[in-house]
Image (cartoon, rainbow, N blue to C red; front, side):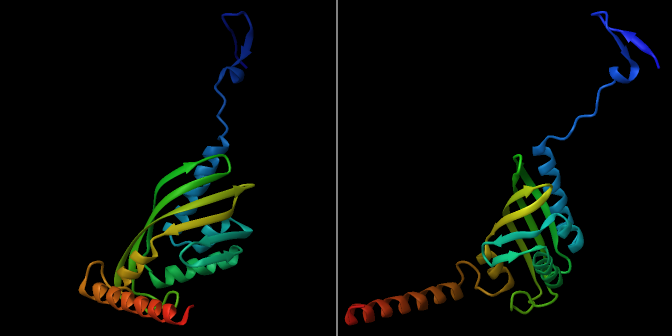
Length: 191
C-alpha cells in the first residue's frame, strides 16, 4: 500500500488520504425517503408506497378522514388508482427536517375507472395539488397529515357546479334562503 508524507510530516496510507464518502444527514435521509414515497405513488405502486410506512402508521386525510395502519393506507391508494388508472403524481417540493418533512405534490389524471368514495366515474380530468406533513421514525412514515382542496376536486369531477356559474349562484341562493328560514324559525321559537 502506498504511503505519503503530509506537510506536517505524518505518514498516511493511500486509503487514509482518499476522501471518505459522506454519510447522509438525517435531514437528507428524510428527504430521500419522502421523495421515494411520492415516486412510488407516481408509479401507482401500492406495495412500494406501503413499504415506506410503519405497520401502524396513521394517514390523516383532512378532507376525508383518518386511515389507520399500512394495509388501510394501501387500500385507500388502491381505490385512488382504480378510480384514476392514469393518475400521475409529481413531487413539487420537499422541505425536510431531521424527523419530518413537508411535501408539496400534484396529482393529475382522469376519473374514468372505478367509483371513488361513493362517486361514480365521470370521465372528467382531475388536477389536484396538496401538501403532506410527514413524520418519520426509524426510517418509516409513522404519521402523515394531508391537505388538499376537496372543493376543487368536487368541482372537477362534476359533483359541485363550476365556480361562478349560474348553477353555483342558484345553489348559493337556495342555501342562503334555507339559512334565513332557519334563523327566522329559531328566532320565533326562542331556540
